[in-house]
Length: 240
Image 1 (cartoon, helix red, strand yellow):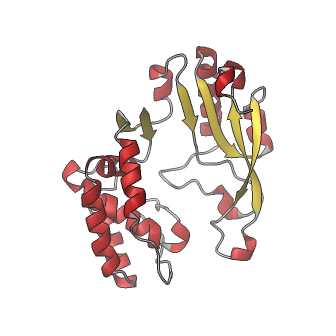
Image 2 (cartoon, rainbow, N blue to C red):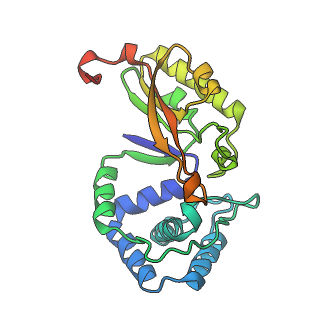
């Protein structure tokens, strides 16, 4: 399997959890015992000062950065992974009573799965055009197109902007891979534009709860779409 993402922090963490999950767990256990608002901002500063800004982390620091990223994600406001224009993680402290900072069982399961990944890599989706072969199963999960539910639904700041032109490029790549004979799945929000971009493919509606709203009463159920080129899938693997 190949696991790719444009966020190099994320791909470094995949490697850390794959290669030394116990080291990551040990660091998270320590962070859990000393958790608090002061520590949150200290860890956030260390994370921002030690290599995010356009420089891939040194492998010797992967365990530290994996623990910092997981810790910050579990303890920041609404779990919102967001960077400012200077490339610094800037989500504030989340005032949770008992956040689940470390889940050893889940991390060990993730490590076991990642052992089967030949190459976690930092790459854009265009690398698929050069590398994918007929019969390859490919799942794509881009930042979603915005809906009208809330301004936060337009958030795409995980690792730079991903705008309308990028969605059009991705749809073009999807069609190239379809013609090649790859077996494709792609998730996105159910919008008129999504349906336009992937017209002609199998579209399944999946109810999803939007959980990023600060006000729990405003977290509405909407439809996501799972887009597949089922005409190319072997009949024995299609859902009944």
